[in-house]
Amino acid sequence: MKNLGKTHRTERANKPIPEEQQIIDKYELSAITSLDQLEETRFKNQTMRELEEFLKKLHGVHTGKEATPRIAIDEFLITRLQEKVNLLAYYYRFIHFG
Image (cartoon, rainbow, N blue to C red; front, side, top):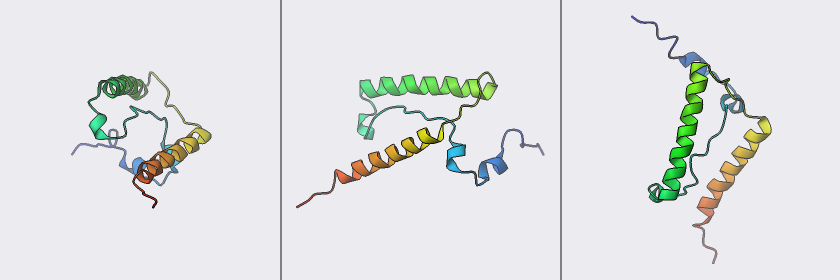
């Protein structure tokens, strides 16, 4: 039986590490708000460019050519807050006051 310890680090992945230590960088592939927009040229091109940049960075980190980036705690908190605002804004669109 092969030892998969070098490729699969389940123990490390399952440790209860704080989320701010798990997130090493952030990427916004596109600003779509609906899957219906996915094929629109402006979103499709942006998504492809951002995905290409992400994959280059991932390859560099994986091969050791680039250091693993770390996200600053304030940037992490701002990102989390913005995610919540965007999520709530989406649902508030459907609330009718009357």
